[in-house]
Image (cartoon, rainbow, N blue to C red; front, side):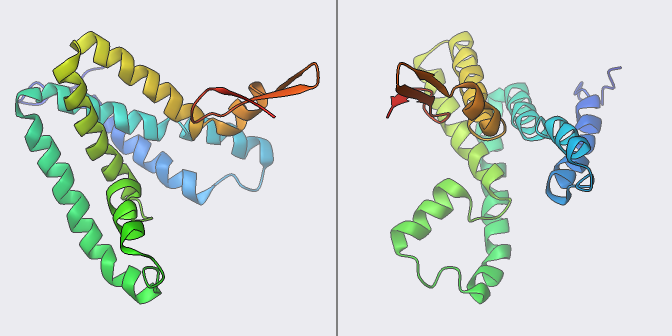
Length: 188
């Protein structure tokens, strides 16, 4: 069932985002940790949450593509604001005391400062990559490239344990493993 607001935006996405937010919390709290099979089965469902949020972010970006830099500025502002909020806790913990400036810059611009900020950081980087690709390729090509990277990202993180088992083979004494980051075979 589609629920549209005054702007014509599908409100059912907001309802789904709320449900997915509860599932994200359950990823970290493991409510079925007392039963191995129930926990792993529920875990497969919850692993759809983060890719869903990236896809939903992409949907809202495309919906307001004419004002895409508004999206970039909004996400960047959230990222910087939460970085400042987390900063006193990080300083108190001594986390930064043994890091060089280049390590701090890497954490800030690429990882998201070790908190839930990695998602905002990933959204910012994704936005910049998509805008760069749109200057070179058609929308359909960028969409295809995005799907490929979504699959690679899911294989690298969410489904990495499954990928490792699926892509590990032995042929004639040469062990062939697939690195889920690059998807290139590596022989040892």
